[in-house]
Amino acid sequence: MNLTDIIGLFAGICVTISVVPQIVKVWKTKKVKQISLLTFSVLTFGIAVWVVYGILKNDMPIIITNSVSLFLNLIMVYFIIYYEKES
Image (cartoon, rainbow, N blue to C red; front, side, top):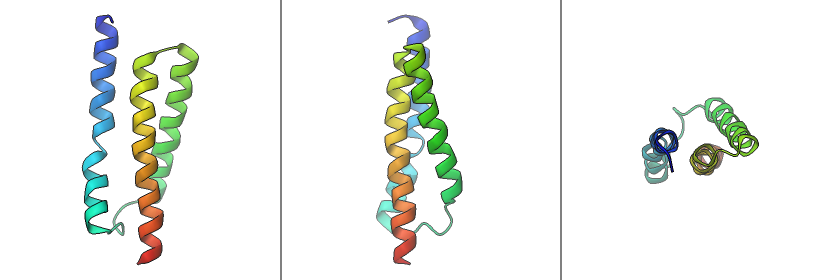
């Protein structure tokens, strides 16, 4: 692993974990009224495109971090849809 890969992984990890506090908060409170489904949907779509880009470039830091980020953002989109129905 070279320095470029390490920097890419570090950047990807920072971006990936940024959504975790929001997921935890929504999971605990079950409140999503102030969270935009459109924003998270567009973000999730963009991350999916990054995964495809990483696959096309065969760039493991992009593939790994964005795949995890995609999964986490899909959880958030699910929570927004699910908890919005309940309220």
